[in-house]
Amino acid sequence: MSDTIHIQIDRADGSLQRLIGLVERRGFHIDGINMADEGAMRRIALTVRGRDAARSIDTLGRQIDRLIGVARIQAQTFQSEAA
Image 1 (cartoon, rainbow, N blue to C red):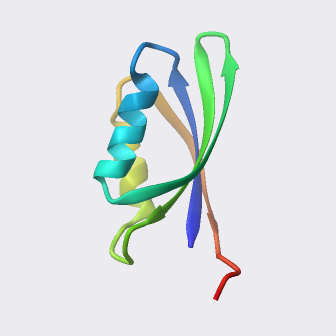
Image 2: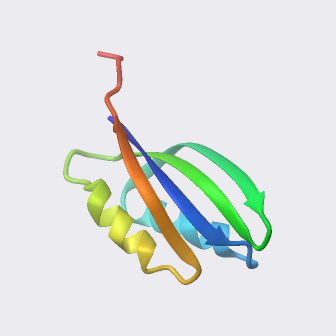
């Protein structure tokens, strides 16, 4: 199962690297990323899946919220159609 987290983040140096590092350190694989710049901010749709069933997207979202310059917008969950 993969989840898409919609994030708004400052375009400051290293902000994207901090976000990606956090996601990977918390036990998630990044399956896709879509970005669009909006002035001083960047909108990101980050599609992730946990390395195992114990990984919670809610916990990851709360940790992302703590990053400086980040405002999480919402999360969506998608069931994988592959068996």
